[in-house]
Image (cartoon, rainbow, N blue to C red; front, top):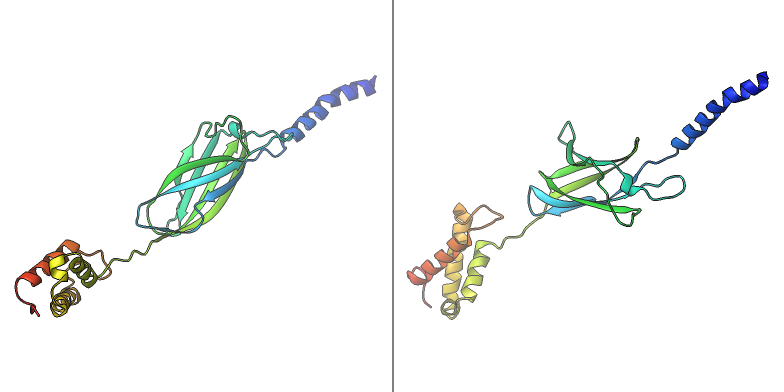
Length: 216
C-alpha cells in the first residue's frame, strides 16, 4: 500500500519533469543579417539603407514556427556613442507568411545618421525564448569626383560651335583665366568641389566676348 501511494505521489513529479524537459527544448530563433555587412559606401548622410534579415525557428519535431515570432527589435550603436539606439521595433507578429517560411526574409529601411562603424544587434522573440545575433557595419562617404573648373570650361567650349571654331590660342587664354580664378581665390567653390558650373560658363562667355583674350 505504501508503495502504491509512493508511486502515485511521484507520478505528478515525473510528469512535471518530463514537461519541463520538453519545454526547455530550444525554440530560439536563428537570425542572420543578410545586408548591410562589411564596409558600405554611400553618397552622403543621413543615408537610407535597406536592412535585410533571415529568420528561422523550429519546434522539436522540425516544424517551422517563424509566423509565431511575437516581436523583433534591432539596435545600432556607433563607436562614438555610449548607448545603443533602437532603429527598428515590431512588437506584434512581425512575420506573417503563407506558407510559413524557414528561413523567412524580413526587411526594413534604416536612416544612417553619420559615417563610422555601427554594431547592429537583432533580437527576435518566440514565446519566452530570445534569439540574438550581431554584426558590425562600417559606413563611409563615397568619393565623388567633380570636374575641375578648367575641365568644365573646356567641355563647354567644345559644345559651343562659335567658341570651338575660334583659335586655339584664344581657347588656351580663356581656360588659363578660369584656372587662375580657381587657383587664387576658389571663385568657383572649394577645392575638390562641387563647383559652381554656371559661374564658370558665365566667365567663359565673358572672356570670349570682352576682348581680354586675343582672337588669334
